Image (cartoon, rainbow over all chains, first blue to last red; front, side, top):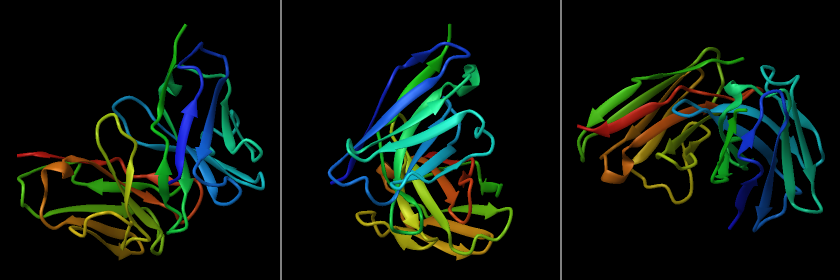
Length: 118
Length: 107
């Protein structure tokens, strides 16, 4: 059974960089697309971007100038960095796997709340 | 970006009711449409992919239909565990986008 687990600081100061890691267990990261999706408190879902095991990426244009997603296949992990954060970046951040069926997200991490505040 | 809309934004229903949620894309997305269920404090759960394919382990009372720009999620007989928020998501192109959600609550 594939499992995803997000890790990283729960509090980030404004203007600093948010960094999260997603560890994949129960399966290899060396296939599929791996994504980051976020959800501000009480709001809907926003796709941040994705990475293939080869390292190719796609980002949401609304965040592209601030986002970097990377993969470490040796650790079965992929990571998110979001720079110059503001309060608007406060959200629950999910990592997810784009599965074989219809490019949908079949496995998700439990989510981690990141609050941007001084 | 492809914009996704959902209707209604909320629906009050009783156990046993048939519930239908509609999702519309701002441009054609063929059958690249998924439906998710989310309960408070939990990650979304995939229900339907490719517009009408039932994800493994999901009860058969859930069904999806549609193609192009108009899609429907139907719960044939609402169960207590189905009270949640439902999201559609287009997978036709980047950036992936989600609908705003439909909350199904108890009447």
